[in-house]
Amino acid sequence: MPDTGVLEPPLTPQLDEALGARYVDAVTDGVKGGNRAQFGMLVSICMAARNRGWTYARTADYVCDPLKSGLWRQLCQDHKGKPHSTATTLKTFDNGWNAAGDHLNSNPYNSEDMRQKVVEEAFAVVDMLEDPDLDVELTEPQRATLCYVAGEIIKRGWATVTCPTRDIVAATGVPRQKIRTALLKLVELRWLLKISSGQPGAKHAKAAIYALGPKAK
Image (cartoon, rainbow, N blue to C red; front, side):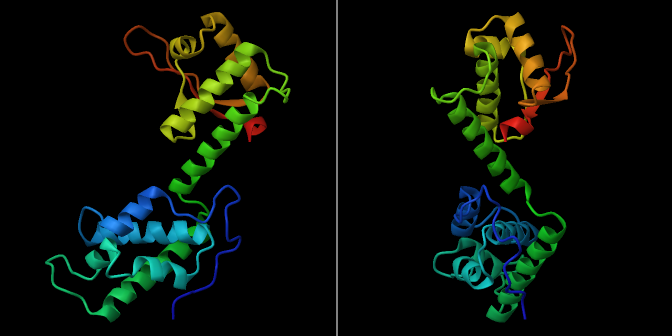
């Protein structure tokens, strides 16, 4: 029998119950690739569902619908297009559900959920900076710089982003030296974490890499 219990804790605090668009599209339309790609997506969907508190029954009802689920129709065939029995395909789903549970027990949040988490944190930072009634004790250059970094995280969906000084200047209108000073101060105050200092140089320069710091979360 499959494990039908809900993972504890059942929800990441930053996540609601809805699956991400990537997973919804995969269930509806299926995925490109063979059986391995299909099973891999099934496991990812089950991980996302478990992280959102979905039960085995709810997830199975959603994924295993032959009329609405393109992924299910793919799972019902082998690599040559020969149909599996319903029992065999249900066993595949059980294996995917249990593999998701095993992975989550060792690594609570998959990369997709982590990306959603940091984007939501970045939105919260932008909202905070735009609130005229909230004093976060930052100078205007510091606020503009922090807002730029949060905006890049939202746009790219990554926890860490490259932040070329010239791009921040172009986006904010703040002079270059004030941006550099603001970045140093934001790291000192723990609003930002400096992941990499980058690499200067005309031909092979690399921008510094930043992430939101503890004070921004």
